[in-house]
Amino acid sequence: MQALRTMTRRGLVLSLLCVAAGGMVARAAYLQLVHTDFLQGQGDERFLRVVEVPAHRGMILDRNGEPLAVSSPVDSIWAQPMELKQQRDRWPALASLLGLTMAELEQKLAVPESRQFVYLRRHLAPSVAQRILQLGVPGVYSRREYRRYYPDAEVTSHLLGFTDIDDFGQEGLEKSLDAQLRGIPGSKRVIKDRLGQIVEDVESIRVPQAGQSVVLSIDRRLQYFAYRALKTAVLENKASAGAAVIADALTGEILAMVDQPAGNPNNRTELKSDLLRNRAITDVYEPGSTVKPFTIAMALESGRWTPNTRVNTAPGWLKVGRYRVRDVHNYGLIDVTHVLSKSSNVGTSKIALSLPMESLWQVYKSLGFGASTGVGLVGEQIGMLRHFSKWGGEIGHANHAFGYGFSVNMLQLAQAYVVLAADGVRRPLTLLKREQPLDPADEQRVLSARAVRQVRAMMEEAVSQKGTGFKASVPGYRVAGKTGTVHKIIHGRYASNRYFSLFAGMVPASNPRLVMVIIIDEPKGKAYYGGTVAAPVFGKTMGEVLRILNVTPDDLPSMKIAGVTPAMEKKP
Image (cartoon, rainbow, N blue to C red; front, side, top):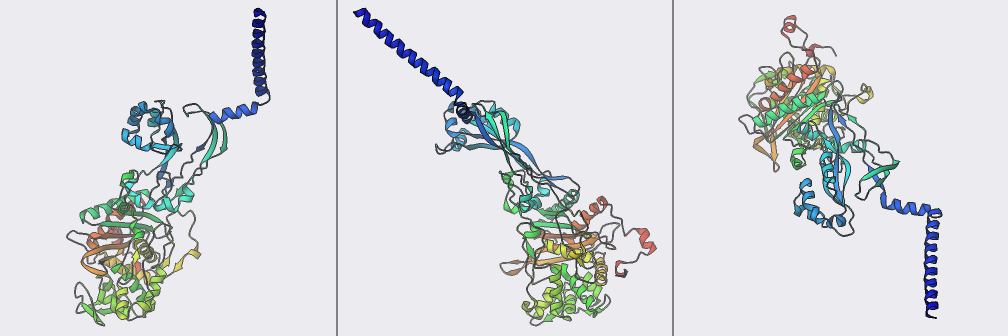
């Protein structure tokens, strides 16, 4: 009886085991044959991932195709915080390669448990990132990115600006052209192993689109020479800052735009606002004597004045209402040419006051003062040019004639001097290389060719040995230019001993090709006049630039012997 019960129990157990085994086999067959897609999906969820494929930013090139800003591949190391926290014994080796202290690494991982992603170190060289991954620390992964690099560093920093760590433009052309330069990331489906490494590309979902490259009007060589000369002037004169612009008078293209002081955008620790401000567009100032050529040109156009008309500037000052306009010296009875070459405030005021106030305002307005230059740089300040009815009578009229009472930025002044170089025609400025000739419809006549050529001849006198801008001279070339020395406004009042030193000029004067404007902010050396501080920057820069551009000299000894016709005698 006992033996029968034992056999019955054994049979029952075996039957149950057989049923269980049969059920498992049936379940396996069911899953393998019927639910194949389900199982594959479950596996893919564990190893199949959709990852972003980065797209590099477009290059910024100079007019000759030389790179000014490029994007180079880098790797960023990230982690799954909860997974890495379980590997604390691996932290010392990891922190060492990351260049972090243990405290810094711990702080990066001090995030909520729900957080699945945290950067440990951005923008590492791929070789360094590979060494970190070779440690095999669970929860540590890499991500391919791009970092912006500027070959000329501080020389182009104010113009180009920079990008942030996520490659978005923050300042300068990087910001204003961001939509064009920025790439569109793609995506793909990949298989990753248990360490998060991609072992196989499965399929492309969206192809990345690289950003468009941009070709600037800037000439890298000219940029360098202008920067070197400007930096030398700022250091030698112990100035607070300086800026310079070179423009092509024939096309309106900006060939160089430089600032001092400057920082290196490749070193993010140097990205301070004062070192990145593009003073050519963000700073405005009263232009002083640099606008006297336009006052004289307006007078010549009126027909009431000629280059030889006499003006009595004695005794060196002029009473206008209850105010006095003064000259540095008493020049006595001089002609209009010497009013400009000697930079006489008294002579310029008398000439301007003989003509309607509206005429001067209209010339300034047509030159582009008080309006955007249209070059598209972020942060441009347009200055102030009030309607002539608000100038405050005769003293306001006189002040505006020699550059006080209104403000401009340096690019506006360069634009105005392009008008003088282009026989009275205003051409739109651009920072992009012009691939096609300018449309005549885009040009605007501001002054007559005859008046402008006469003024250019007077401006040559200003750069002669007897003029204020002699230090802007360039051997072998005729230079036309004008100096300016302007009292700075501090707390709403003119400071007695703080100045802007300016020079604006063009070369070769017989047929101008290039225009350059320089401003030195608050020189603290022995001299502060524009002819002493700013004019040498023109001479040093153009000496190199004209050689590089192979511009034919117009002031060789043989030309003087042959008696080449002066610019002022050209027929319009």
